[in-house]
Image 1 (tube, rainbow, N blue to C red):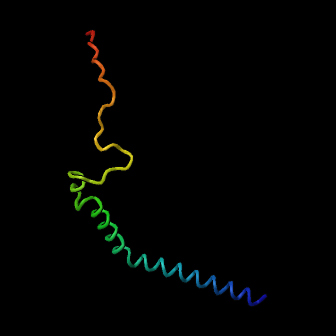
Image 2 (cartoon, rainbow, N blue to C red; image 1 turned 60 degrees about the vertical axis):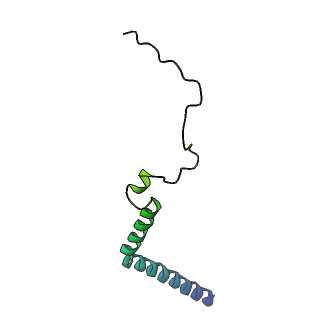
Image 3 (cartoon, rainbow, N blue to C red; image 1 turned 45 degrees about the vertical axis):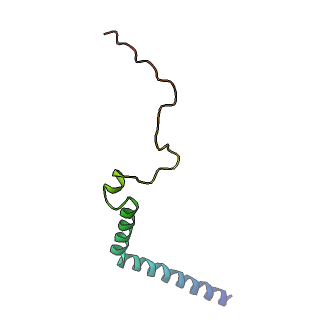
Length: 81
């Protein structure tokens, strides 16, 4: 029984050290991580704040690329005033 308790204690210590080590790494490298995410985001929109908005961004799935009216046009009612 004592061996099982010791194994569980060792496993718990290893998991605790892994969590603390990962948190420490993220804390130390947070600026580099943030810059990496920023660069990937900027690259995904076409290279600049307005680059993707002004020309040919990726189409949104499920939305028509050129919406046009599909039915007959309705007459505009005359205003009584």
